[in-house]
Amino acid sequence: MNTRHFLTLRDLSPEELDYLIQRAITLKQMQQRGEIYQPLKNRVLGMVFEKSSTRTRVSFETGMVHFGGHAIFLSPRDTQLGRGEPIEDSARVLSSMVDIIMIRTYEHSKLERFAAYSRVPVINALTDQFHPCQLLADVQTFVEQRGSIRGRTVAWIGDGNNMCHSYINAAEQFGFRLHIAAPEGFGPDPALVARGGDIHLFAHPAEAVTNADLVVTDVWASMGQEDEQAERERAFRDYQVTPELMAQAKDDALFMHCLPAHRGEEVAAEVIDGPQSVVWQEAENRLHSQKALLEFLLLGRRDRP
Image (cartoon, one colour):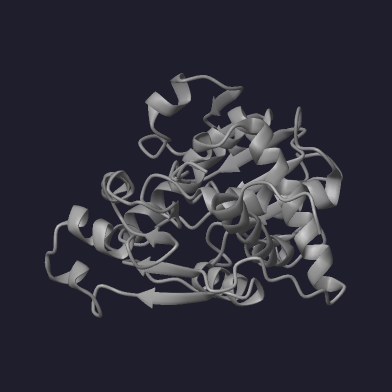
């Protein structure tokens, strides 16, 4: 099997992504039934973190334990990565010792350079440009709650950040319509928007969420942007997802947020803690969707068990 990387959603075909969603649902059901399934015995996942994490670290590490394998946590403080070793050298060495590597870092180009010199699969666990693993969990959650996302309308409210960019990729790969409402100067990469897909930009959140099946947002200041917090609070003050905004979407619309969330900023407490919110299912599904991804990259498709 050729080495496959997962740096963005575009690294897999739409058909492969659909398989991953269904496989994640199957693996979740197996775990809920208490079935022991350990296809990755004696396999090792190297986890490289240059950004802090809760859900990403716990989900990947737990997934490897469930699969009978092991995960090694690596931070810049503990490795030569933080002391200036060339990325190419680190990639060569790490990929000679572990079976698969996930990286959570800042520059997407750094991840691409690492993957180019790795002999094992590399997974993007978040960069400043993309967060594809989160989209697997989001789509899985929607499918579990409402069925296929193909042909549906998703509204993204807020910063045109890495999550927004991955939703743009997801719209193309999973076949849904994406409405984006971001303040002027904070929109997504125009090149991504222009590349294709059913993508529509709106100046006002109410226009974007009209008749939406799913409303999604994220923090106003991501990791590394903390010094912009005050400026961003001013720019985004009209982009909070409130009950009034959700009322413009379909009656059965869902709300998602990749977490951590700031109640009273990007989302009202009444929304994230309300009946339309599926953020806790979404967070749990990071475990199941990433297990499906690990299995696929290392073993290919598995029709059984």
